[in-house]
Image 1 (tube, rainbow, N blue to C red):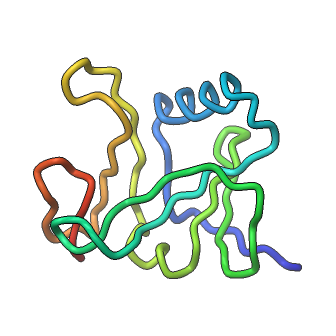
Image 2 (cartoon, rainbow, N blue to C red):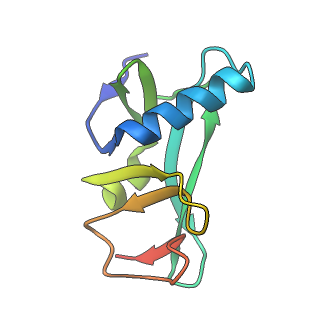
Length: 114
């Protein structure tokens, strides 16, 4: 199986630190960070993020500071150039997607339309 490598999405230093910390705390071992989009949410598309042990020929992969990041080809169309950030703020903390392809997004930042 030949994997496709592409820099579809980038992660800030704080996002890399938080993802690696989650993997370590939960003892997940050799997993990839899977980032994608799916239909739904108040603006049409919702971001999804999870850990995965399987990578297929339909996935684009990249390595960011030793962290394997996987995006399926369909999601890559909507995520090209996106930056995943992590904020430690008490009120609006957590993962944040900075997506140049989003034409509008909801107030919570969890869904968008392109």
